[in-house]
Length: 102
Image 1: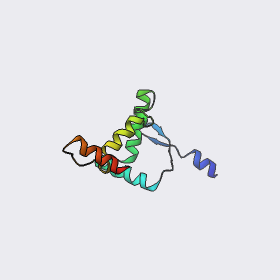
Image 2 (image 1 turned 90 degrees about the vertical axis):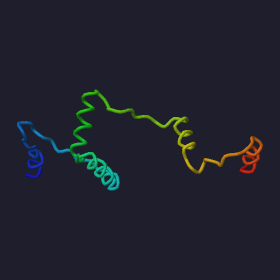
Image 3 (image 1 turned 30 degrees about the vertical axis):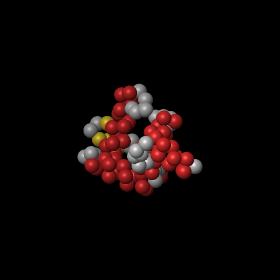
Image 4 (image 1 turned 180 degrees about the vertical axis):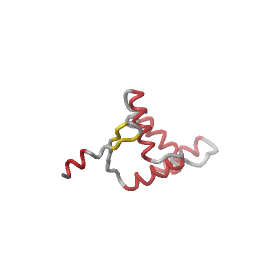
């Protein structure tokens, strides 16, 4: 009986059968995504539908998935305020400051 109920959980909507998609994600990820999509005037369900439709349209993931390259990591380090030094009046002052850090 329970199996029958689960298999019949496909609803008819607008003449199109609808399937239920369940995923498990961390609570914080769900909260942040809900807030983002709400700020865009969407709910999370609509955003997931858009992702799935775009995946089909692109015949793949609709954005690039890649590991961070060494250049990406270096750029992040350059943008980190902790890695920005004060301006120096001369090259000698800059070299002196660098040698003091070591």
